[in-house]
Amino acid sequence: MMPDSHKDMEISAKYGLDARHDVKWKTSMMLPEHVAMLRGFGHEVKLEPRPDLNEWDYDAIQHTLDAANTRKSDTKVKLWREGAFIYKRGVVESVDLRRRVIELEDPFTLLQLKLDEIVDVTIMD
View 1: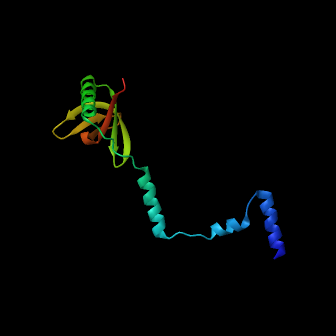
View 2: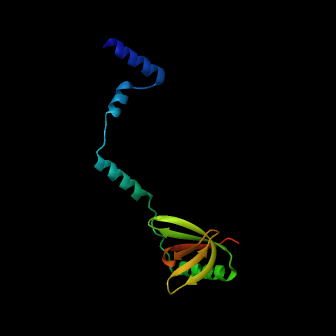
View 3: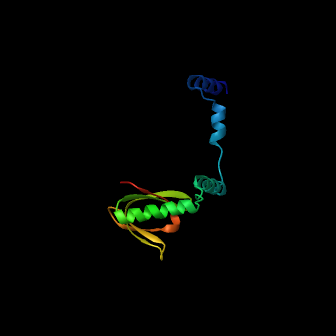
């Protein structure tokens, strides 16, 4: 027993490790239920709360969308979906208030974005 403890003391002194502490944590394990709960908790922590927009904010978004649509300028749209902010950039092709969507053309495709998800609009030109 003495040679092993002497060897552990040498390793401990050389590398600054505590062999007993290392062994203690190597033997721990987690149940699948615990892992699932921790993953769910991590997902909840990352969620961003939906911004609380007032009448002035909606009015500013409407004016910016109208200006971007008439000028056909490069526009950045900030969306909130399922607890995360998403940014889309392109040219506003149309605003359909009946269907409550805007069509944004980026270099690759024509996107349809819901007006209810928009939290900010910025003209990039």
